[in-house]
Image 1 (cartoon, rainbow, N blue to C red):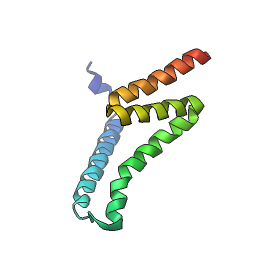
Image 2: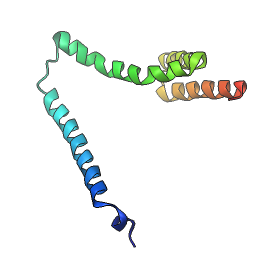
Image 3: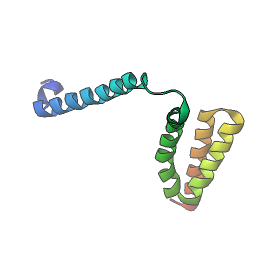
Image 4: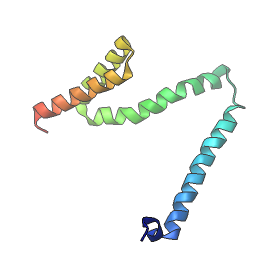
Length: 106
């Protein structure tokens, strides 16, 4: 028996619907972006938006990790700033957290 034949049709319909809505929103955003102002206050707001979204995703993790997370985030930022290598900075930050947790006995 094929694994696809055991899928509930309502579950498959829900997944397909969610995929259509997701890609519809992405396409709508791309089409809408052509009509948004590229300069002025709203243009500056849109230019700053990706950084603020990234910060809102990263900041709770840093805060919940405590001082060790703050040290790792600061070290990562400094490493990326100095080397311009995001991958190396991320590896270094994860290494700091891993070493700190190992040392503390987590």
